[in-house]
Length: 121
Image (tube, rainbow, N blue to C red; front, side, top):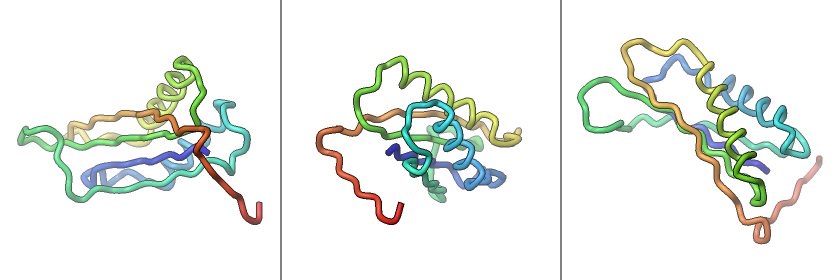
């Protein structure tokens, strides 16, 4: 735990998803909120078909979802959200011709019903 999902629009072709995931994982480790770095699972999905709003201009997005076991305070969740957003903002030189929205969503996973086993760790 946690589970990090990075979704982004295909028109952000300069985005290196592997580097983005590594930087986001480092931010999570640095937060001190997670017991072991190998507990962090992250993945990226590039969306070929997408739409931002109804306008005709070129638009794109990055949406980060962080799901973690329930029980953290709103202040901790807010700090994690702000830290991840700062990483995303600094990922690369944003294209001047694309209006890009960046956002982070924090989700709670019910601690009582969550199950996990680690093999060969």
